[in-house]
Image (cartoon, rainbow, N blue to C red; front, side):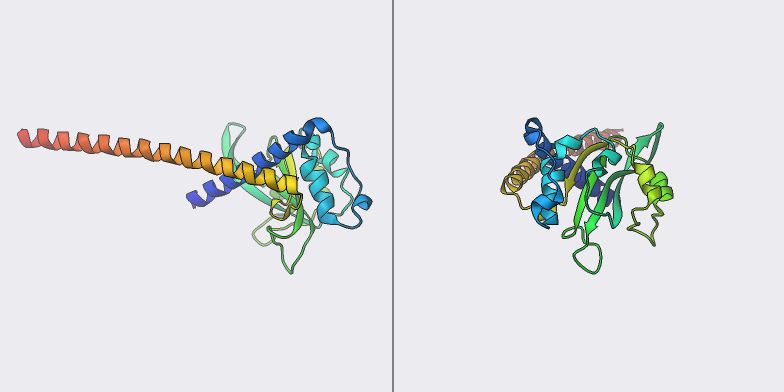
Length: 219
């Protein structure tokens, strides 16, 4: 379980980093918002342009400000969680909230559905989110209610982005590939350093055990 949680946290961190990187590339261009009519019914392109390519425009904004532009209704939401420090205590926090705009199959599919990811500057606790949304083991994808909106609207976002698994813009895909390649290389380097440190520590422990064993035999 501990490994699974760490892997989820790592995945979320890489995803947030990717959206930040995309936003920084076009940040200085101040790309304007384009209404849905511009894309002639292509919801995926609308979300990708406005919430991935233009993601820098929403950094530091409130959820209410982000959603004031959205021209499609939100069907339901899905959260991802992490253990974080809140009021000097370690608690489960809502690190990411996905706002589902379109479902492509009979049930929610993270890889194929159309949604917007919101990452928070100061993530609320899962207990707070549960109270506002009605989230539970029997309700993993709560509806986007007025109560939930009221809870979220003043929270500031650190980054936003549409579903990274179905991106189509060639430049975005190129940046994504380069960013993930670099991250994988850095991860391998860190893992190699970690293994070297572990092996060194094991050798030290083995040497100490041998020395203590020899000392005890001498006595």
